[in-house]
Image (cartoon, rainbow, N blue to C red; front, side, top):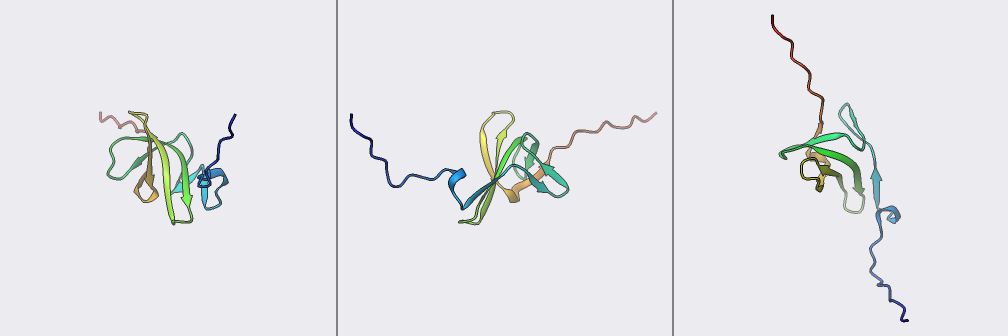
Length: 96
């Protein structure tokens, strides 16, 4: 059997790359966002489930990884587009 040649240009996974850090909680205003929380983004329709925040120090970019609720697709957005956490609806007071 032949040995496979490993390519020299293998990409380093996030867990072993010193320039990329992953955070599983994020503070936005007064809200602390944890994995599984519902969040919204500016100019984007729909709600998303928060997974993690990734910070690339080499490029100076930070983004949020999340899953769209309706289509269950994986999406990433820059942190500056975050609108906030989805709050539960409050019942209206009935006027008598």
